[in-house]
Image 1: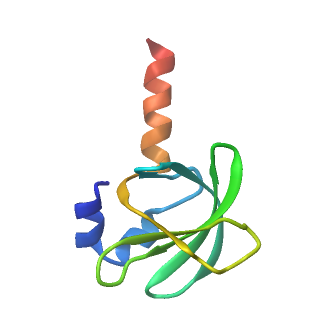
Image 2: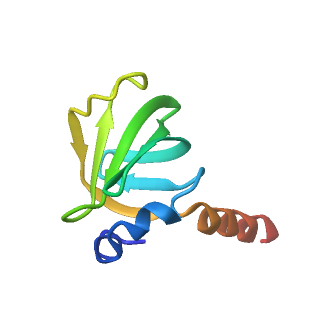
Image 3: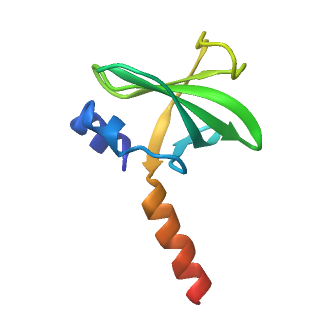
Length: 102
């Protein structure tokens, strides 16, 4: 899902994200490993970036915004990442299966 498509979907994009989904940003990829708090406007996730646990918050109000907390136990989000796209878990699984068949 591109950033533009995610912004058009609004809060419906929050329902599509599951464990294994990848957030692609300019500084690296975040892979969702768990869920956190949820409201109508945002969803918090436990994620990994380069093997390090992180906590990310995807806000879907007035556009799509990805915020990152360096400490996975903290809910203070000081860094904001530019979200390029979202790779859904089912899509990533299908691509890996196609590579195995080659």
